[in-house]
Image (cartoon, rainbow, N blue to C red; front, side, top):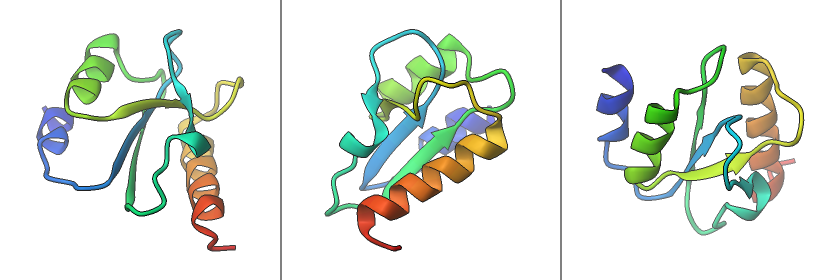
Length: 91
């Protein structure tokens, strides 16, 4: 699948997956190591499947939350970019 191909790409930085499943997740801002670049997976409409989340976690992605509200894909991606930029001091 496209996702499994993507998960196999070599990336030496923060690897995060934002999803809506009820499981342990870290607040996104606390999951970022400032000394590394950050890659964030945002799910499609309807979210990632449990299998996709497990595949990402098995490949070293840390599960994160963007907050308590379920967001549209477009909104989640924008929020993730804004939060990441705020952590890196790009504002």
